[in-house]
Length: 363
Image (cartoon, rainbow, N blue to C red; front, top):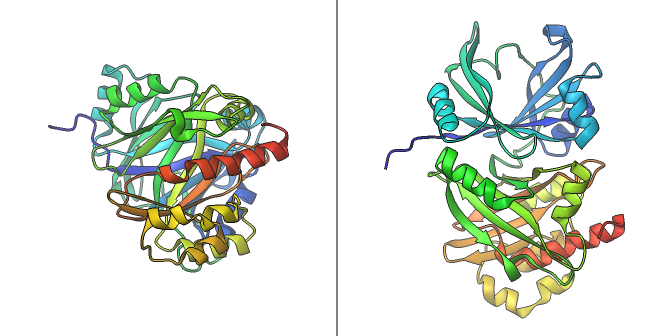
């Protein structure tokens, strides 16, 4: 069937942050990303600064307010640092925008073009859950560092070998999961890739439900979570409370060498969730995962999780929240055939999150 809403992939993850200069330094040093573009008062942006960093095909834009009262300043005051835009690379912005509105999406910015000596970029914006938006981007006729109005920038620190090369998936925490699953199916033609309900994602104290939608090529994957009844406050409840509503919970970064990435990130000061020894010492784990490229002892040393499904296996690990509020965090994932999300690790992961919640007094 023809794709009425074709998407090439993720264009950028755009963050609103309280101090963009310091955030750019953090993602340069702790994540090994390269600063490539900048916009600020020096080149005509009087109210906002932006730093653009890349790692392979993954691109982050960090926006900060120069003056109070701006949209970015208000967003940070209300929600803390967080993702405001999951920008999508599309071949035809006007067609995608028109199709989205015809299928019930809310338009924020109608299609428009911006250009400079490097060419022209087409853009449009639609709304999704909470204050998150999708900017639709076609930069196929542009050769500049990011967008017109941005200038090329030198790296803050010279990065070493790349730690990750792409955005694997972006997870949203919402209050009405089915409504947003249907939104992506209806508006963008995404399909349900997986769902986890009931005992799939439950511990003694808390539970959640999750469904994954993806485009046809599986280059864009959006798991969507909502809280489920439990004895205590779930991680989704905690996020919704501290973020002030629905938003992006975590970004999964695809890596080819998770061991090296974790070692370097830890050395740079990044904190990861701790998995107890019992997870690795369980004989059922070794029987379930079979042969993987890394000895379990090496995974145990770094607290990396492992899971296998019918297509292969994956290695994954999750950071602690990367800002003061217990909201946004990151995942590193190394796939070897598996298209899943680590279902076999859910219990261990959520128990680790609950231990952190208890330390914060939020369980």
